[in-house]
Length: 402
Image (cartoon, rainbow, N blue to C red; front, side, top):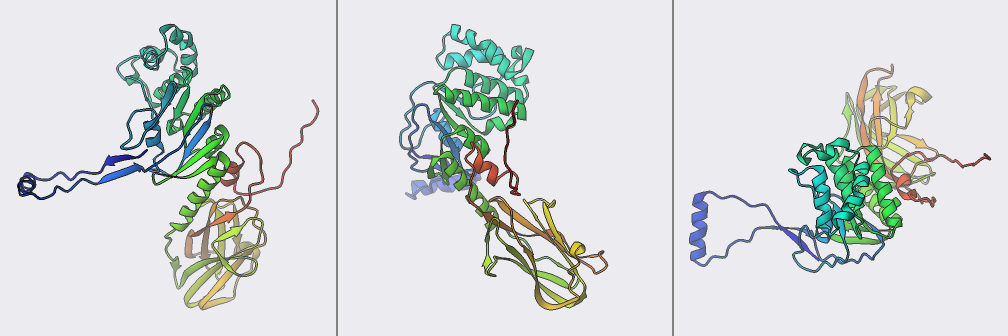
């Protein structure tokens, strides 16, 4: 299937419209408006009872795919076949009429999905309890907050016993407690043999709930396979993009400029990707326009923020050069890098010999990536290793007697 949208239109003045009319009469071809390709020749099959995650960067075509499956929109070319009752939550308030009360919307949505009145009544209390909106069920939906609309919309979609449940990133709007309830409910539906298609930037949810994942890139399927493998590929591509798009200025201060920051492995070779648990040297290349006596260098490693999880400072170790002048470099070697496979930032500063007066302000100098194997076998091993907790510490579990 493919889906194309009409691109931006240029609204012309009356004079230009008249010129266009004259041109068409004279036989000139009309310039076709530009089109935006959301999905281009995408083909995949989702079998009954499968739980599938659609992942990719913003604009990859994930939401468009769900809209085509739910028949909110139709493909420009190709065919989409869906068998069974579909429950969909593609954005906050999907399927809810703002002028109707919550109670009326529950009955309306259920009837649209083909449920009998008695079947809706038998599930009504469970739907309201899960949504947790209390007496607001008898208020018009237009008076609901976005969180209340989300709660009711998801509750209805998940309790009408859909054969296929489509969920977009909308659950991210809810609070942490409701997100947990949503994930638990989706997991229960999967265990019952329902089919789930989930779009989310929460890779932990994809890895935990889905057995299979499809990576979309620029409207094309880039990868299709077991969820942990696809999640790993997606996270690595996102890290590579984050590192490759760095456009950091050359830091400079009074008489000193950091001209480059390079990384080196234990052999001294320059690298862009370092290996976890191996030695890494950060080399600051400088150019001093005048002799600087006892400058104090500091380097920190972080996940991107100014707050670093480790700092190497000459203020602490006292390894201060007596004087620097002209061009040269300063090396800081980390003997072992116990870091998870993630993207990191190097921060640094240079201050005067008295420990005061910044020559080069504290700022981000460059970004780099750490590569490592994922040894865990847990439900969310890839995500938690590549997203949560940068420092890798050895540990083990012990379960004692009652």
